[in-house]
Image 1 (cartoon, rainbow, N blue to C red):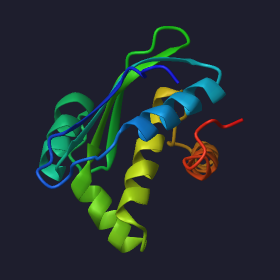
Image 2 (cartoon, one colour):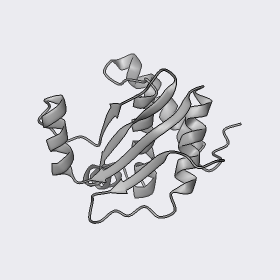
Image 3 (tube, helix red, strand yellow):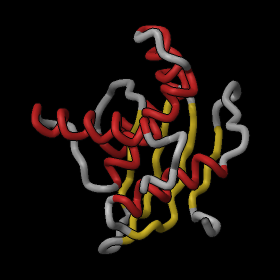
Image 4 (cartoon, rainbow, N blue to C red):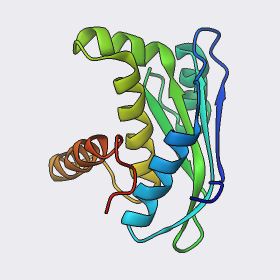
Length: 146
């Protein structure tokens, strides 16, 4: 696959993503599977307090969360920022007895699904987004999705 315009940054002192090419290829494959065009996507890992401040400042919610997305899509081109709390990932992976990297991938795909237009406010939306998460988590080993 050609270079994907996906950037992964870490503002969190404890989290460093290794080889990001497989993640970029996986995300591009998901976007293409959803019949969209990959645009520029930034994935930024940070701590709880930093993400809570973004939540408070831009969304007027004074609470912790694991992911916040800002959608900059233009028609079918998927672009945006995905802010992720690594502290929430660590807490959730312990709470749900999940591997940390698996939880990282789940939160990344959850954020991407938001950019793709999936929501999680209503019960039926939650069911759909969870089904998509599980499907695409199963595809991470084989990002061709064919």
